[in-house]
Length: 274
Image (tube, rainbow, N blue to C red; front, side):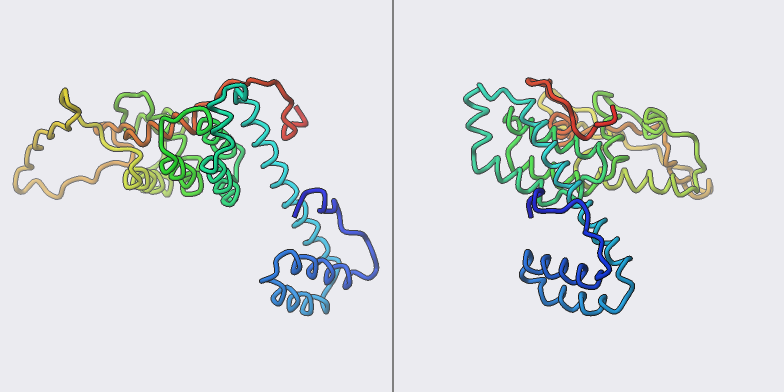
């Protein structure tokens, strides 16, 4: 459904029943497999308060319009950052592989629930056109991460980047969080966040490597003497163990958190109040 075919507002009428039913039938025609279901919904709603039904459709249409506008602005921002005089970039943008990345991104647009995530998507697609540091399979994984992780996950990734080993406690301070209790929901969420990023292959505990890049085994920890009680639990805001990004995590930062400079100046219509 194109933006020009979406009305700004449903027409006011005393025949709200017909408006709502007609809108559902139009939607059913646009989505064939949903026609039967929508017809059933139209029949059920026809007996209810139609003013509320019409308000729902107005909200639904506005939501679709906003999503289309965000997609348009994102593509404009990407093109404004690419040197289309560069033959390699021009061929890349026209390639089936790159178009596949764009389609995947827009199919999964629901993951861009914040403007920060929208910018991450923009950066990934712009850098995917301008550089070949990572394969398209890796870039598709980066797009999945936008859906899988929250803004807080990405704040932590940014705090770890270029820190050459930073503790969870230092990261918490670096992202501007205030002190919370160890038994709080925030502390549990923070520990869960690190489990997500660790199992996702984005971060790991800092390990020394030899000249060839092989990890050097850690020195075995000194055993606790018998009778000293249970081992204390590691704090969510531990200040001992350091963390770093994996190579995959570093490439994600390059693609998603590196904003290419503008090649063409333009006014962002999403910031109309500025």
